[in-house]
Image 1 (cartoon, rainbow, N blue to C red):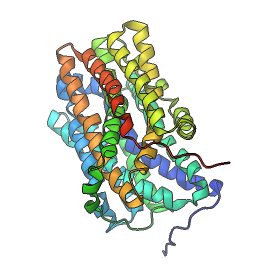
Image 2: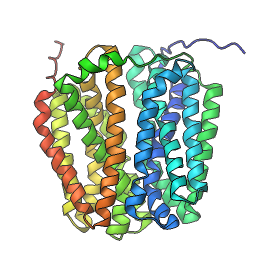
Image 3: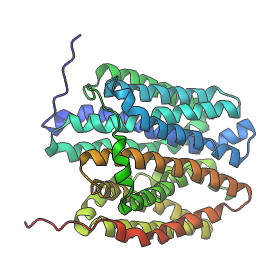
Image 4: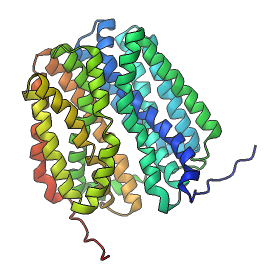
Length: 398
């Protein structure tokens, strides 16, 4: 059957079904990584391992995620973006199914590596496919619809674990999730209109000049701390609230799920604030509030601590649109692509690998609260790097 090349949609309602298809794919890219956190308590009990051993599972996941993102350009040079996106869902789905089957820590390492590798294949191809799917005048709405996917991942991962474990064995949650991901990947490869074109290898020659810019390192630091306070904190919170604080599994997963529902609203509000007060001021405000709330998780007891757990992800979500805007000031489009390919993998290793591993060790020494306090303090101290960010351009006269 002869396939036609991508033609950008000029009307949002025409593009919405295909953008929604991509949103499902990015949902699995995020959901597969987030599912591990609420399952960690059950993995510890089932395998008879310590919190430090279980949280170290995030390290191979994050390394595989970063590695897959870096090499995806070589893959898309040979295969279409559409096929790479489909492969992403199939590989991470296979990893989730393996999580449900293995009975050893070594097997879990393999499963988590597969999840990370599959999830890492999506972002470069997903962004390329999305931006080629629509005309510029509807791109903002298309991106907003696309970003519903990862935000739903934060909401549904703990919710599905809470429901699934109340009805049966935790392994069924991983198995069913993996099967649905694999089926989604197969359907995407067969029916998606987006991504029917090849990618290019990353232009590594631009990395040197990019890394000599002070604002590059400021953005990297901000991104690393922000991601640690979202995915990193999310990864350790179930273990902290259940094992250390003694809360029940159901209420904890419900709290984590509900606290992420506001993510979509926070992203939209952030987009408005970037235009009103500028990138630097917004990042400073978000980091100050999030830093204080993260410290509060480590300092406060009982209900006040739970309030901080709820509010912290609401505030930090507003960082990411501002950060993407800041990255766009690093240079022309081809340099921005290189910036993303360098910053995001490194950030992922820090936030989803190193940070949860450190928090797992602190948990064993009954010092996990110091981890939250330390992260919050670093976020506040990082405000000294705000002057390194480029100042916002003056608004055009109306």
